[in-house]
Image 1: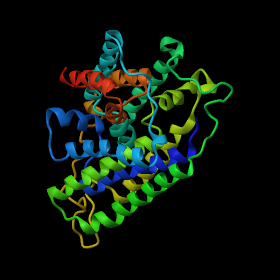
Image 2: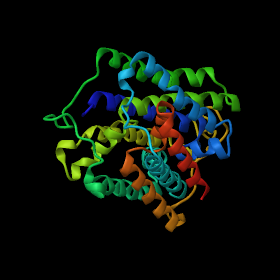
Image 3: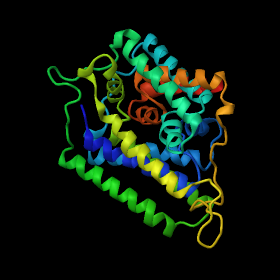
Length: 332
């Protein structure tokens, strides 16, 4: 169902997590590389972020469990397990070769005006749209209750609203007031904020609906079945990518800018920027095919790497199969 309040404020949390990591740690919030890095190259940057995403489940579970997604049944046969491993492989191989996913390319890349991310997003979004609508006759797009179109708006309960507003306000206070004053420029501070950013981003995924595969797939339904269309995720463009773009244009992170005293502008917690340097000239067939493979996996199951982390914790049987395939895809 259409969730204008949930998704708008959840998108602001996604913005706070990703822009906070950029301005404070000088890095892009690319979950696909962070996730594979935790297994193959663990360090003090990727582990805290993934731990933070996992930890975001706790306040939702304790204070507003109705915000947790309802997932399809976990694999219960060799065939369903093999299928899940296969989509996980597509997800891993696609994001590795496409150099990113919805977080790194769409949320962070588009807001940094990256032509390379624009191309990747166009490829994987178009592929996901066509896959969701035309593979298996579009039957993998869940219907809403009989007689109720999926674009019917629903609003948060008082309990949900308390958590959503509290998280949004606390996140803003943390990123803009507490972190610049309480943390110094050091590796320890970077790790602390990496964890905080992960919690913020995870809450954004849960509250916005991005962690709900049914909601993602219903967003694609406008092409063939308007009654199944849930427009919620369009609000992520407005309240997630939009503020990130404004922040990028205002702060100019990674560019050769100086402060009022003439000193180069640095991230709050580290000495330098760690931003992607690849350009359109670096695009090859693996990049394009990788983005398409990611789009295929996204359109089949409605799950991208960030939500996959959350679902792995909430539905371990699915997570074991999906993450096995994901990591295998990263090795190929």
